Image 1 (cartoon, rainbow, N blue to C red):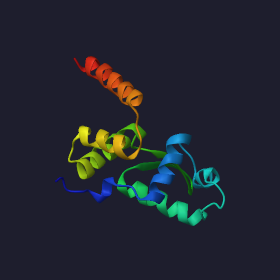
Image 2 (cartoon, helix red, strand yellow):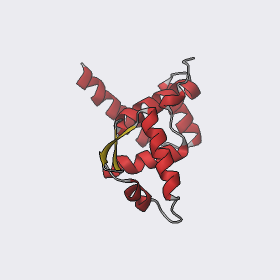
Image 3 (cartoon, one colour):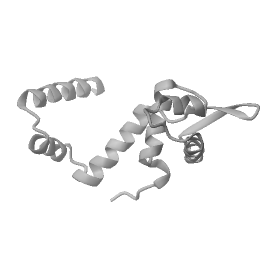
Length: 129
């Protein structure tokens, strides 16, 4: 099993902030706080988490005096790919078949959805060939 790198994992709070930054592309802490639903987290809490994200290499900033405008360094698609690969490896033994079987059993995926998935997979495979 592959060793987990905590630096590349996001906590729930970090992921919420990254989702906002991915959506707005760049922003100041106040812009991030504004995007949260009520009750909004404290400004200092968001600021602390953004600095943690910067330490982890997910975010960088441009300074305007004492104010910082933050922007993502890691693309949403890049993180999604890493996250899904980790989930696939950790919970389904790296087997897409086991993942699909899980969804068939527990998520009530029907035959039509499986056929659509198969069609998408075939299209992607043809692009690689």
